[in-house]
Structure formats: structure tokens, C-alpha cells
Image 1 (cartoon, rainbow, N blue to C red):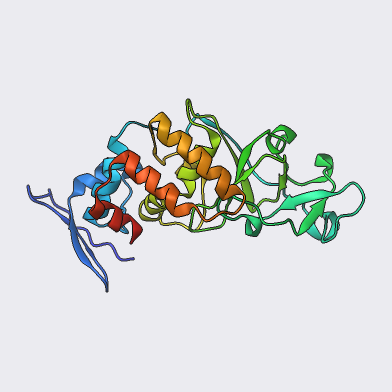
Image 2 (image 1 turned 90 degrees about the vertical axis):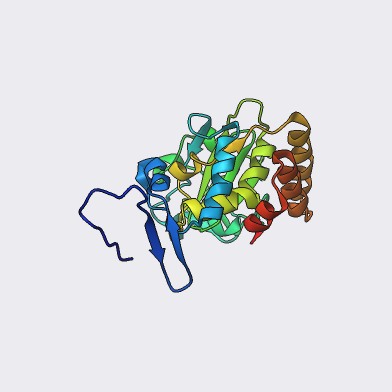
Length: 252
């Protein structure tokens, strides 16, 4: 990336120009000045910015101070502690590659859970939570699976336990996997790592009880592998009253 600056007071109609092989767009400096840490969001067009700004202007919650977090286990020696076939006293442990939207693939690794011998391990209560979300850490997309089996994870799979007022965990799961939040994550952060700090900035709109209930029901179907992702997106778009042009932009 190349950045050209002019050392002078800005003109009244000053603009920032983003130039690339595929686009040449004009942006007002206020957009960057109003962003967290004044980040230059160069991957976002003005139309995209308006859609994202519209969502942030709606009543919403965030995961900041409304969730528990945990990193997956770093064994320090996977060859020593992991097995491809379960041996005595071993249990499944999930990697980032085992995580699909809404559900976990069958585990391909097994471990004896002995926190004292591992290089890094979260408190056992985080892994053993009655229900939690597990997400891929190294990824340019949001990929969250539901777990109510108190499963263990390796460090490529992190843990989120949402605690949003009035928001069921399965409804949060739907939003985090939705095309709407995928769009915001891709345009706003444009990264190949799913970082806690970025997740804590995502807006989770205050949906009406009926929509939350429908999302819970659809999540239960998605968790057992039914193809209901489009239906989930439709519930979210309808509840937020997005226009067809806005939806087309998000889906594109």
C-alpha cells in the first residue's frame, strides 16, 4: 500500500481518494476520523459504509463485557499428547479445521485432559460450560459452531460464551454466522485472524422476541446439519427492514 500526504491545512471540500486497479473512489475524511483508532478502512466503498453505519445506528449490543472467552489448549507437544485413535481415558479435542458453521465435524484427535502438563490451558470451567460457541481463529470468515458436550479445543479453536441480556446463545450463533455480520467483518476488519477485539466491536441488533425465537428454532436445525442458512439470513434481514438494494449489496 502507498500513502501520499500533503502537509497543509485541508480545504473545506477536502477528500481522500482511494485508487487501485479495480476502483477509484472518493471518501470524506470524517469517515476515517470517526472510526475506532481512526483506522483507514480502505476496503469499504461509500455504499458499503452507509449499510454498515445504518446497522451501527440501530439499537444494538456488543460482546464487549457481555461474554466469557477462552483460548484453546496449547499442549507444547502434540505428538506426545494427541492420538488419532482414542485410547483409555482419552476424549475428543477439536481443531479449527473441525469447525463448520453451526456444528462440529467428528473429532480426528483425542487427548487425556491433564492441565498440569500442558503449555497453555484455560480454566476447565470454560471448556466444560453447559453451552458455548467454538470458532476458528485462523480464518478470514466468521465460523462458529455450537457445543453443549463440554468439548475440549486446541489453540486453533477458541471459545466464546455469550452473556447478552435477553439474547439466547443460539440466536447469537445465528447472527455470528449470518451473511450480515460476515459482510461487516470482511469490510470493516479485512483480516485473516478472528480476533477477540474485532468480535467485541460487531453490532448485535436488538431483534424482536419473535425473530429471536425463530432464530433459535432455525439454529437447532442448523446444528444437526439441515441447510437453513438462507432462512436464517431472511429472518435477520426482515427483522431489520433492510431494503432489497441493501440486501443485494451485502450478498454480493
